[in-house]
Length: 270
Ligand code: KIV
Image (tube, helix red, strand yellow):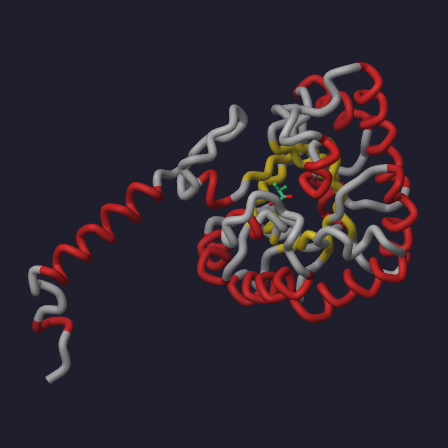
């Protein structure tokens, strides 16, 4: 671990859990925000395929491509070179074959400088996770609401409310841990279930809409900064109101340009 307690490598994640040190992760898609988040001593950064929604304005994550993920991950790594970085493997880059998964995850690490990949799914993905880990590619799992399966899940819904799905999620989490996953994102799961799953594992869980019993928490940066004002699910806490700041600053710029106040002499060259 680093002197400031942040993880230096994926090996520190389990040690952080054992020490009861909670893990803070945020999504990040560019170098400018990455610099700020590293200065804020965030533990982990995630280039989520949510970038397809947040930056691209799409309804789902399904259209994100591997090249897009690599481009954004490389930018984030340049901005935050000392922060542990995970990158989502987008839809269909790891589900078709284990060979695809190894080649695509390998490209992410090789071309972006990221430290690991995240992929969605439990037991059906266990063999793929094992194959990646055996080849030196750290994997973070993702269970509960898995956005790449939004069509099969019938929308963004809390998962694991009934005994069968709760049991299935527990078994999926154990399978990911046994396959060598270094952490698991738990998304939209009842707090009590997420707490039980977290207690049963030695690897950390990182929750989003999964309550306080997880070993860490993740939010989408733009949501928590208040840049995505139309999105306000119950689990989201806005830690900033940047939407309002951006509107006010842009209004001011527009006014000063129209009134001939900007640029003044102090912003002009002799
Ligand atoms: O794509 C993403 O941003 C994610 C987080 C919500 C965990 O998977």
